[in-house]
Length: 340
Image 1 (cartoon, rainbow, N blue to C red):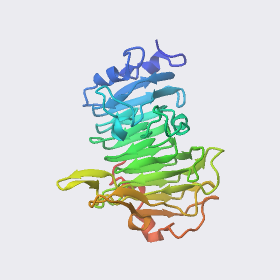
Image 2: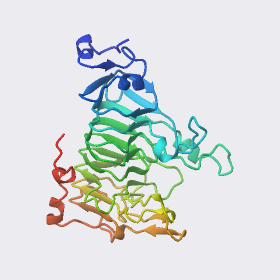
Image 3: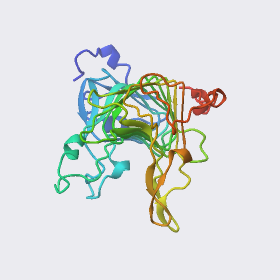
Image 4: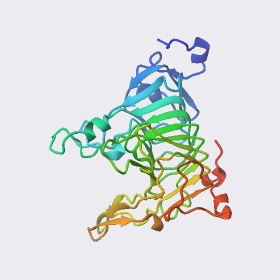
């Protein structure tokens, strides 16, 4: 049945209506032929499904931004259908592996109980050691993805932007640890970035964890965003981010990719008092020698300009762009001329 409040004429504007023409989101998207925009209406309600988009030009449109919810509760440490851990790359509620994807006016949530897991004893056999829970992942094959007026909800690793160009407009991203991360080239414009509370943690969280390839000029760019917090998050307990150097398999072993030199930029963003004067932290990775080493913010591309609000406090690691440098970070440049 079409959810209450959605007219039949509105439903007629869509190629599929979840719960009416198709019982599942996966079934609806399988009907797309990829040659034209294929619009799927997500009615009000919680649709519990783990979905992978493999057809180009799929458009998901919610009936209600907070009431049309795609949710799942897989964490990296959970086992998949083959008995192997999902891992960070496999745990996402919604994964995009095709170009031209659009999402509007809905919520995508990873509902894994991160706090409940955190509060378990280290000796509790049910405590996951890998609690990453991705809500949305832009994976290999994704390009020119447009996400507008969408709520993205999780804790650790909420939004994994790992491939292609993408634009997020007027979205709300909630998380705590590295909750906007990856190697993609993305603009988050006029978004609210909400840091969530982690009981017992002096360092409450890290907003961005870019793994941008060194040859790629831009990574995760936040333009005119608001960095806010849950009420319990104390002052100066969150940093803007840290540079991620993910492990890759090479001919001579598996170790942190030396070509990953993260780029994240905060342009004209308002920051609440949870943002630390430290600005950025280092991040550990496995070196070619096998030892654990750290990539320092000074050795990556982590910058800001025209920051405002109580979290705007000068610190030694907070590199501020010059006006000439800031011009390069326009959405047009970051998105390589693509206009959504």
